[in-house]
Length: 388
Ligand code: PHB
Image (cartoon, rainbow, N blue to C red; front, side):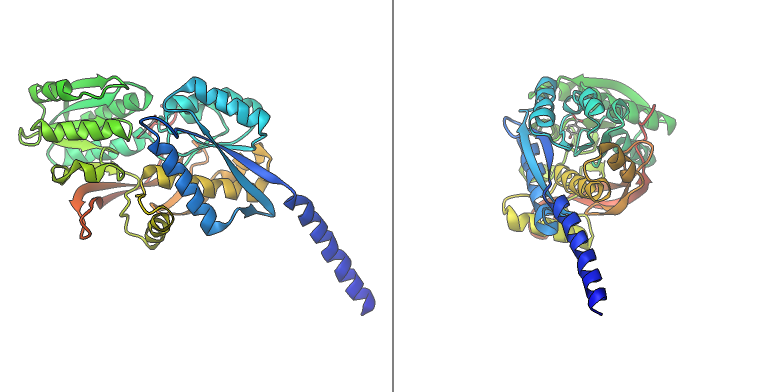
């Protein structure tokens, strides 16, 4: 008996000693995003969602403490992103990178993560080609191909015949244009014109005139969520395009963080997207309630859900592989879980999230807020732009 007790004591001591060694480790995660300037909403939404996840699930994984270190790159700025990644990897010794709101910021770190063998979880940047730049990229957001093909098909099935596209002239805009044109033409539709708008544009009135004069019965738009989408959608509303019979189709143009400022004119705008703040599930209700409890002025949007699921993925990789980047990537392939947006999984080939895409219309909810109400679902859509 005594011997048995001693045996038990010895083996639990060994377990404790092992756990003790592991618990000494702090695993740092570097978050590269925009925390200043006109697009600072991205960093704010990422950080809040990370804090919600940590409040719900703690900051310890397998006895390791997970610490997030934030770096501001001030907007779409690949040089700043590269410098931030260098500092995080070399000076801070981070074992995971995360964040990345704008495509050029993600693209810029590909050679660094390849060299360091450090996984980088993209919370937003949505150009398909990013994940082809490095085996160490994972993405928990969406791609333009993934959400645009469903809206093109829906538009064609619901009476659109002649469409003009209007996109921001950089990688995700080009993806959105290509995806819309190919899916819409495949359904027999006609593209009457294609507009590409500079990234820094804030005056959309001239583009509205061109859309009006084009003879199109609908416009498909893509702009990066934030001030640009708000200004474009406002210009669509204020320049009488709806009255001229030109239907609006888009993806993230009715973002939750700016939707109320669009006012009644936004009601009825139709978009396809992977997340709505009013997605009808218990998990989404608890997620948005926790976010609003911790940050009373906040509203959950695509950035929030991308970051929340991104942290989940990082925790799962730490659980499976600690700080071994190669093993972490392998362990992520095929993982599936329930997100506030619905059931999702990591495609083993593209390392991008497979998810439902919802068709939504702007409505005024009972509490007076404008919301994106989902009314149709295209299930389990992969990144349709991967390896194209
Ligand atoms: C991107 O740069 O990939 C990007 C930025 C904002 C969006 C979507 C995509 O809303």
